[in-house]
Image 1 (cartoon, rainbow, N blue to C red):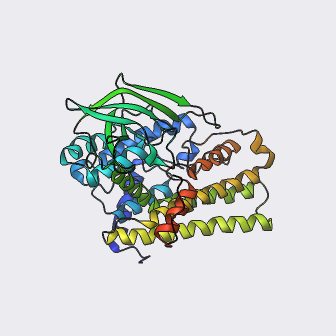
Image 2: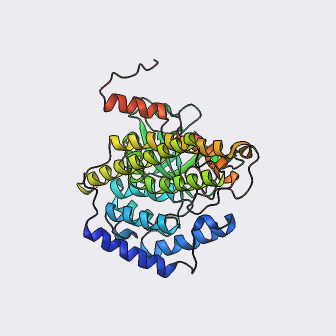
Image 3: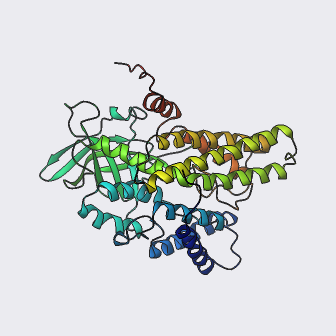
Length: 406
């Protein structure tokens, strides 16, 4: 593993700094310093600039609207954006770029790439993910939503749940069962389905934070073209596992940048609360800082593999387990520092949910308590911590498989 950046990475770093100095308003102090409405307006404008330069999808080829950078260049970009307090993506780009976009880039047909990728870059299409069902969450292979081909179209019936951004997305990448007689993992297909059609109904789910980003999605004769299949019919499990690996692989190298900013805010919070000299608090702050450093070195190891042409494997599961547990512990500490103030949150809420709030964000009780509540979900979605431990125990440590109920 090499922890030194090569000269070409530092050349790119200088170019990115020049871009930021040229584009950002005078006196810019970071997205976190804006109120929610201002932050959303800035993010929409900023996303447009990133689309124009290709920086919104930095490692995608320029022919599909990306910047044509290496994975190392993508990490350099993320580092400099974090230092400047600007987001690397728009509000809905996690599913569009990091997930389905990266999957199509690697496994899509040329027709799919030419059609979908430029539209994702320019924000013409936004996506959501249709995996989990009421009876198929961690046991995803138990899904029951079905599709069958009729006159060149897939006809879809069933239900998905916990679908983030379903009300704002106009496409969904969807796991369905297309061969009911095949074994659980072999009869699944991934379809690309337009959301704006009569056969789809969306019902929001209110979270304990008061938001309703999650949704139930019902399919009653919904349709999509026969060609809107990823990899191929009955290859959906392969597509889903590849998608999760690509998403987590991206995060292994970039997550430490954002979680380091969160730890810096946590240290500021301890100072503001007059607890920075408390020995127990200092011990917990050191542990949080150390966990982020471990994340950083794990990311560098993954990045080294990327540069050798390797696809992230076990590091992706290690990273998902590690960052989600770290985030929960870090926000637990923040709520402990707030004390009784956490029971009646005030001040600005987080601009983005699920992960750390933006650099420069005020240490309001609302910012931390809402992030704390969302952090709990990080140990559940995209594979629970228990599932990740089983994967690592069986595939890395060689332990026997956990008994599965018949």
